[in-house]
Picture 1 (cartoon, protein in one colour):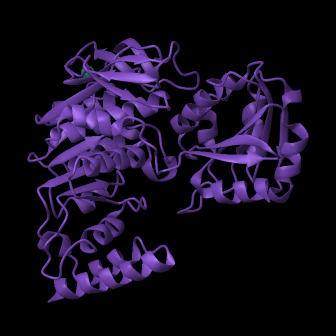
Picture 2 (cartoon, protein in one colour):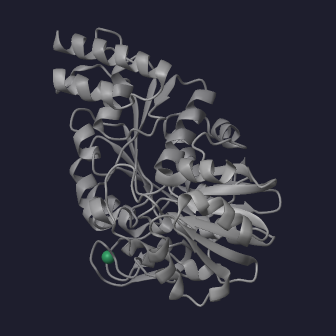
Length: 440
Ligand SMILES: [Zn+2]
């Protein structure tokens, strides 16, 4: 009876939310109050895919779900990005009948790294994909090895792990758990020729703490590595990106399957490969998977094109408190073959909690912006002076750097100092307000 009421309330509220917008977590929150173990009671489908990790989980979840759908598998996923237990409960119950039978054939769940242990205490995913574990949200996630321990608590021996073999921390899950499939990105035209400037998280093996040796790096601590002491390493991957052709914008998997993509940013390569592996594991023919992933138009909107003062501009959503996300945005800016100006806005650090902690700014490789093609850098928002202190430690000429703490004056500041195409780097927390101010 409790399960029936929980499903009823969840479905009614979810229906209301679909009309007025929002309500992705509230229905599940109420349902869990009425029936705390409702996720244990419902009858789920066989194909349950969990996706977690620091970066790329929203994009990869969307890639997996849309590929399965295109291949004829009835699939649902938490597209609103509500990745904590309440949001997952909303997703599951709103797709159940009143007897608790989950109707779709596949369930793809993006899970917050820390909430995975709550969500997966009630049911076991068939596949558990871990994209990477990087520095992210220091104030709530501490450091990646702490997150490793938390995720390890909720992995069942009955789940098949799908692991990014190029991430030393993720790869070490395969030492703890036997049932794993690995994927890797070989050294290609888009591998990074240099290591990160601000820190080196790939110096030591997370498993035995001895030094790691890298054959090459793709970005950050991700690359082909081998521990000098234990078996942690990226040698035995069943799936690999074997070639990237920047002219035809094609990537090749296992020297056989081609995927066309407009976005050759390295983190997108990892997302596409992870989706390819996961969908292949679900039994979809690999040629079909490659076809479905080709020219995929992302719904998650990490790159937002807009018009500023009559010219094309791009907003690159860069997660605050996540240096790798900013580094990927900087790499995208530097990939342009034209003069650019960069606006960086840090006004609210998080949408979900308050923090004024800005040490993460020192982890970002802002030094990379010291090139002739970057004509001006405008720093905006409440924390623009924290950004300025960070930029003062680089060798970027001072006359290229401008500060504007007042949101209402951002537009005129950009108009005054912009040269070439405008790129805006900011987080989801500030994105809407920044675009509104710039396009008003
Ligand atoms: Zn080791």
